[in-house]
Length: 509
Image 1 (cartoon, helix red, strand yellow):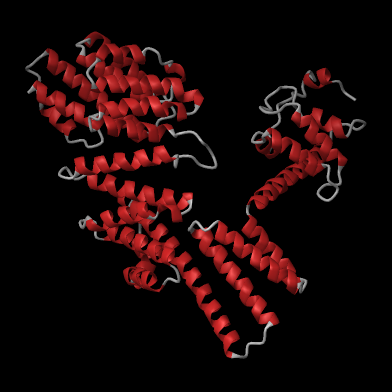
Image 2 (image 1 turned 135 degrees about the vertical axis):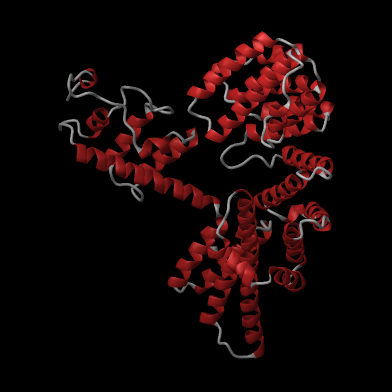
């Protein structure tokens, strides 16, 4: 067998660190996963190959990063075929087998978390084996599970639909469809099955249609060829929602469709604000009946409505305050957390920060920074704190403190390099440090020219901001400067810090 040293120093046969999908999965493993997957691989029911166990154990020596130069194909191969020379096909087959087992493991642990779906699979098997008594007892158990986890969402509708389907199958197989009581039972179950399927259809169609409407505001969607727009043209969803309100079997479902009705009308009859008011009121009065995913959906719709309304100058202040209220609710209830991450997204933190500052709620904003900065990922926390503090002090016109906070940020490792430069540039302007501002502009342009992470639209916004700052600086130094360029930039709605720019223009006139 070749030594590890010789494998790494084979002259022409260069060794590279391995890349494989199994590595991608193993990088996500917790300590518990490592143990459980080992148990899985050592179980003869799941795996009968001891070689796969050996491959897993050698890979674990490089957990969690798997980026060592010692981790090579040859090393792995040598652990399960110590007396044979490297065979590429055998190696890849073994890695593929381990990957397949890892996928099965993930599927298994996910399956374990979903009791109702697991019971549905069990019932399917019990039906195939004609185990009638067990079918009846498990139907009772699964209905109990559904009642104990009765938060309403798409899964609730679908699971109820499936349970009723199983009940109908059980009646069909075991009870003669004669006699009024059995006929009534069977027909009522059929009706309920159709109702829950309709609940699923209506709510999911509303979601899809709403997403398409939002997409259509930014992009030109071909409505003529769109199946969803076609459905909404052919069907009267307003009338259907009213029917669901009146004919739902229980109070909670009726409330759900009142909420969806007002959501639908809020965006369909956008000028009539009563639907937004009703939507918001009904949602917060009944928020406990919904699952977390459903709550997130409705909060995002309230936020979207307020954003759209705030673009109207006459309504902007009212709906910016509404926006801040909704964002604050999301933050305090922790609805920003997901199965992927428990950390507060930087983008959301920045949106709330800017909203608070624009509304001049300085005390609230300062409390927000200090309270929620610890919810941001540790790798980004310090820099975000200093940048947010700089923006807070900029709004308070305490420019020395702006500079003090900005200088704490390591620019080489900071993601919001454009934001930082913009604030620094405005601060130099406010302090009349025009040489520093001019020098920063040149380095800013150099950064934009060679940076490969920013999109073209983002770069254009940055260049526009630089150009307007150059004009403002020139005008501030020389009062004879032509104002035409300023007016041109003033009309650009996407200009960075547009309110500040307009304020500076007024000061110069």
